[in-house]
Image (cartoon, rainbow, N blue to C red):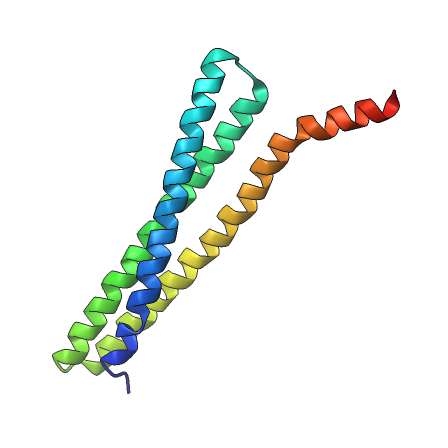
Length: 136
C-alpha cells in the first residue's frame, strides 16, 4: 500500500534536479550568447558547429525540465489521491510519475554525452595544431 509519505520523498530530489537543469540551461544560454558575439566578429564553421550542438542541448534540457515538472505534478496528484481515498489510482499515477523521472534522467545522460561532443569540437583545432607541430 502506498502511503502519503512515499511520493513526498521525491519532492526534494525533483526540486534539486530541476534546479540543476535550470542552471545547465542558463550556463548554455550564456555560452551561446558569447559564441554568437564571436561569430558576428569572426565567422567560423567551428562556431556554427558549437552553436548547433548547444541548440540541441538546450532542446534536450527543455524536455528534461518538462518531464521533471510532470513528475513533480503527478507526485502531488498521487498524494491528493491517497489523501482522498483513491489508493489504486494513486499507485498508477505515482508509477507514471516515476516513469517520467526516469525519462528525464535518461535525457540528462544524452545531454551529458552531447556536452562531450561540444568539447571535442572545441578541442579539434588544438589537436590538429599539435599534430602539425609534431610533423615539423
